[in-house]
Length: 68
Image 1 (cartoon, rainbow, N blue to C red):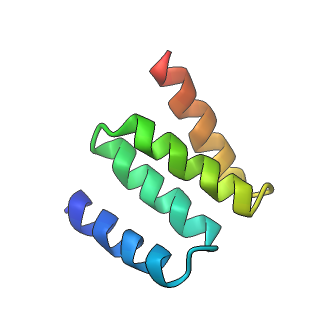
Image 2 (cartoon, helix red, strand yellow):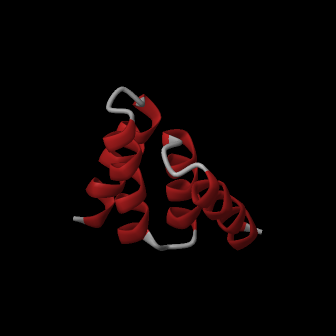
């Protein structure tokens, strides 16, 4: 189910690459699959697009803490 969700998020990003929240949601789905490094990249991309996206900042910080 998570892989299916990730696939849908990737398709939205393909169509609308500058949608920060979708990058964040993809990051969350990836992280739940144990793909923390890829999730961190997605959270960072979300913040590049929208530096004020609190959800992405929060998830990025949590992922970086777990990665230590």
